[in-house]
Image 1 (cartoon, rainbow, N blue to C red):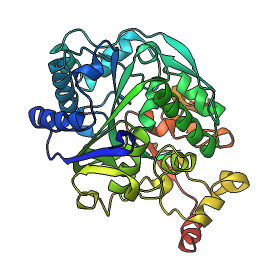
Image 2: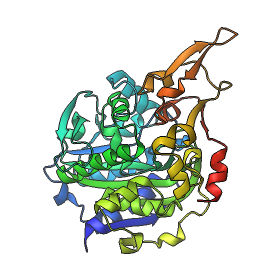
Image 3: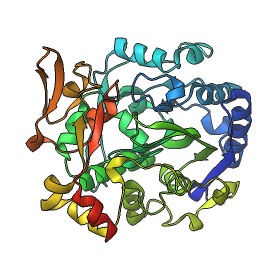
Image 4: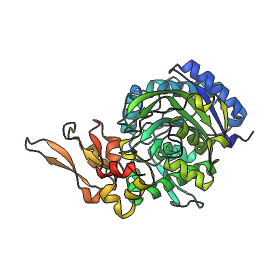
Length: 390
């Protein structure tokens, strides 16, 4: 069996740590992940903690999945470090707040002092990259021999889907993410950069991708969408192969840019039919009405033509401030890679966010990191007409 074309797929109906541990134990055994594999290696667990959100919001990796994984690793005498860097400032105090707010702290404390508090980073270079050769990487992931990519399956306003590959963007420290958005404002190049980043880790480290797809997020993810039960767990040693299957499960088959780019590069088989899926039949869990982000609804060649290149500024979906929900916290302004959001006082003297359109690169960082879900997606009404002919 070629483990790098293999994806384990199991039903998981609830966040029961004991049941999840049994599923992961079976997955690890099939993928050759035992105590001998881990012996003498530094192990890091990279969850998705995109922002301070309670587990029930389905924006972050659920603590029960982390608990199950840590218990399984302890049985193999493995003590990992839990490391992540969401958007915004990368400081020890902020990370403590994120860990606690996402329900990670009490789980980690059961297994020792394993939460990362080292907020330094180091440079990694990837000579085989097609778009970006140099990355700043948080130190625990830079130093790890094995990275367990403990991601959450979600929709995403910029990349349509967030899962195993996109989760590696959290290896880039804090505000450096915003700099990367500014450096790669075109969506195609940004997608290529993410593929380079993930492939770099696959070349330099042992990667284990575990996707929390028990309850995912649909709509305007990765933080502003709605929880949606999917009811499964995926495990793989190739995050690209895992995402190929995840794309099908969400009913997004053939339409997720990162998956299509990875397939074009030959990082995994070009179709689910050529994967070695072990466990349940993907057709039995595939969704047919999973809500995609407003920014990507429609699809089709005509829509792609009118939302890229010279037409992009006119027709492409854009973030829009919902003034009735905006609290004037300034998080969107702080997270904007182009510094194109200003805080202005309204007639009542209250500060509200304002987007300077000419500088917006439509990265949707503001939507992703707004704690009050006050960023909507504005679409040109002509796109509805264009879409009918795509």
